[in-house]
Each structure stands twice: as C-alpha cells, then as structure tokens.
Length: 431
Image 1 (cartoon, helix red, strand yellow):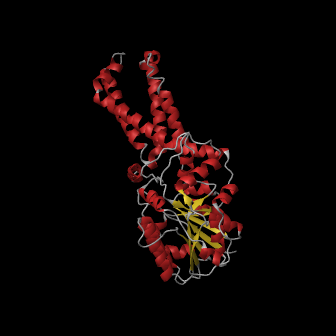
Image 2 (cartoon, helix red, strand yellow):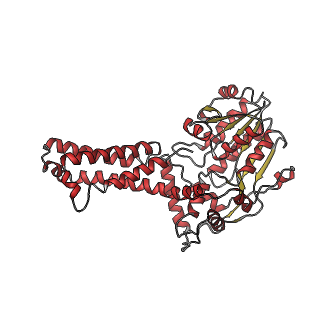
Image 3 (cartoon, one colour):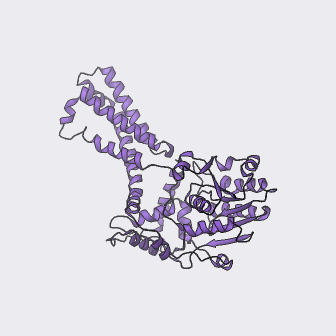
C-alpha cells in the first residue's frame, strides 16, 4: 500500500486531502502540532504530533522513510503569537527538500493563487520563496495554487464570509472593486490525489479555480441567499479606512494568539482580488473545477450552517463583553476600595477579612478579564469566571443576603455573566 504524509492534516484543506487519499487507497499519516485538533479532525487516523517548523532534516528523513508522497497543506496567514511565516513557508520546505534528496518521493505543495516574489504581503512572498526552493532543488514535485476554497467546513476567510453574510438585517458592502474566484474543496482534494498518483507530470504549477470571477459584494450576497436568510434591510458601505483600522486591531489580537480573518494580510489579499487561471490544470486533461453555483449546490446550507455563522459573530462579542465587564469590575473596586470594604464590614465582616476579600476579588476580576483575551487561556479564564462568580454568589448568601433583595439586583445580574462565560467555554475550540 502506498503511503501519503499530509502536513497540516487537520486543517481545512489538509483534512479533506487526508480523507480523499485514504479513499484512493493510500495509507495516510497526518502531521500537526495539536493533538486535540488532530483527534477532533479524525481520531482513527495515524498522527504524528510535531511542530512542523521545528523538525530537523534528520528527523524528516526518519519521518519520510517508506513514504511515496508528501502533501504540504501546512501554512499560516500572518506572523503572530503562534505563527512564523518564514519558518513554516520557507525553512520547513528547505529542510524537507534536503531530506528527500535521495528518496523517490513526490512532494505536492498546496500554495495559493497570487504567490509571487514581489507580492504585496509576506504571506504570498514567503509562499513564493518556498515554491522556488521546491522547484530548484526537489526531484519530483507539483505545486497547486487554489483560489478561495469553499468547503462544508469553515475556517478563517471562509468562516468570515459565512458570518458576514449572516448578519441580522444587514449585508455590508465592502471591497467593491475586489474580484474573487472560488474553488470547491473536493476539486482541490481530487487534484491532490491525481498528483499523488502521478497522473500529472512533475514540475507542474497549476492554479485550481473556477473560470468566473465576481465582486466580493456579489459573492457575499450569493452566500447569504445560499444560507437561506431573508433579504437585508440595510446595506451599509464599509469604507476602506474603517477596514484598515479593523485590520490593525486584528493584527494586535494576533499577538494574543488570535488568528483573525480580518488581519491586514487577509484584507489586503481580498482588496487586490483572489484570481487564478485554470488553463494549466485543464490543459493537463483534468476535469475543470466547479463554478461557485455548482459548489454551493453541492454544499447544502443546513441549520448547522446557519447556527455556525451566527455563533461566529457571537463569540468575539461575548469574549469582549466579558473582558470589559471583569476588568471594569476590578478597576472600579480598586479605585474605591474603602467603599467596597464598607459593603462587607457594615454587615459584620471583620475589617481585615473584608479588606482581603475586596482587594483579592478586585485583583482576581482584573486578571480574569485580561486572561480571557489571551487565546490559550480563554477557556480556562471562562471557567475561572464561572467559579469566582459562584463563590461571590455563595458568599453573598452568608455575608450579605440582603443584597439579593436590592431593587437594582446586583447579585441577580451575575447570572447572565455566568451564562455568557458558559457560552464562551462551549464555543471555543481549536480547528
């Protein structure tokens, strides 16, 4: 049985490639850095859990021993707390190529339409540098460049597309000059299988895309109709200046571990258009990629699709609300600590105990409000908020039960915050 190794095997494209290769009779091994994400993608698959950019040339030789094809579906959009473009797009490929110099292994590189040495973003430039290393030094290789990939799964740009199309009553108009082509994930996976079977010649560089391009607002409107939402009431124009500000803010969140599809690289790529030329792929005798209408007809918009789109909007709102609420709670207490202490000491709590509870609670509130913004700590912080809220409620029943009858309802209002923390804990996951 032939063996295929897929880098980034639990990603949007990587997981589809693993399934297609397995269906085609390959023994498939996926490589990625998160065991939790790997198990969520396919708990029955063979996995090697490694951070790909840290794998040395010697380690690659061991990992690739006996393999027939390697599919590189690993990648990152922009530098951030968890990603290094140079490491994943260039250094890793350089080590790979060196490792397979004496091995009869085909490398199938999943790149991106628009990759070029003089591109406007580091994403495309580093992709192009990796391609150049592969083309110059590898013996057997194929480079596939998909345009905007549409799949039953959603991540990054495709998730944002679904979410923007699902906004209640609103369909934003933005990037009106951007021309976008799409490709169905099944066509990408089929192309990878064809390359793995050596049904296309070594040295091929081919875009994978439909023929027609359309404006981004038109694409957004078509996705909204596909999802089954009613016609929007408002179609506000989002100016490029506002998008730029949003992108810069998303870049800052990238340093907190968030891979927002609104980062400047994604917005720049969209504004320039996502275009490809299917001529090379079709000239090799392969089936043309599906059009957008064919893709959407092949992907039913179920209730789960609509719930995901709305939840994708709700999650950052919930996280931001919790961060502001808990940080303000801590800061207000610290700025007026004597008054906070008096709330407890007036109810027979010893001053020293009241002071420790008020000060400690304020610091805990502030730390939890900040922690939920750090991507690796978001779920633990949400659980911490639940636990501390529960402690506040239980303590109030002992020390200040009269607060439950307060007309402004200070204790009752804790409950919606707890529900919001539960929502964040439930919705947070790795891809």
